[in-house]
Length: 267
Image 1 (spheres, rainbow, N blue to C red):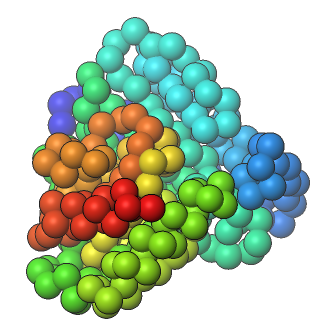
Image 2: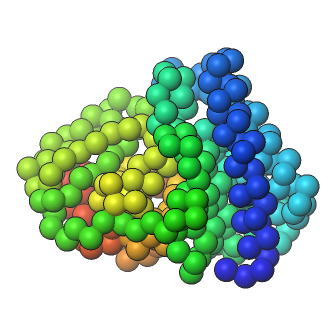
């Protein structure tokens, strides 16, 4: 991680108190709207948190490109740095009063993910990683699980809002279930990526629909914790573009990807 990226990391980490404060504030004074699909929600918290982060980054790094879930491209950028911001990943959980949500900020430099931070509402901890520097929960190093038998694996999964696509995922899971230990679903990409990075889960799978603001931060955290993350090409670390996501502890990454895609393609 070079000096420019480190400066950006320091700015993001300085936001911890304010972001967690907004989590708490808006959980008590929430307004909710939909984005066209009744399952796809947005709150005043999403907008306030994204605005805070954008303003902070723009003030310090006016030539960086910024892409947020709620406001899209806030700054076009000219220097090769691109930020991907998800102010609340797991908005439905937030609305329902569950704490399975978090704020995700990922940094890409010349097309490569180099830093990510997740402010997790599950435990009010900050999970972060920088390229080549390891992954951390606050100041404590974190690591993926050491499991290497598929029958011992716990797989987190995610669902699309479209019912037909969700049913295709359920059908795939039914085929895979006899081969693994358990499935879990939290409805929050960043929470599930944290679980892989900390060894609480061994795999996270989401099919076709995730966008860079969902996974950029979590992907570098998993990788720096010793795991691996890819799109459908199991040998290439994930790139910041929409698509499928496979995050694992790295032990059986290719096998997991091939197994899931084989069953999914049959539907």
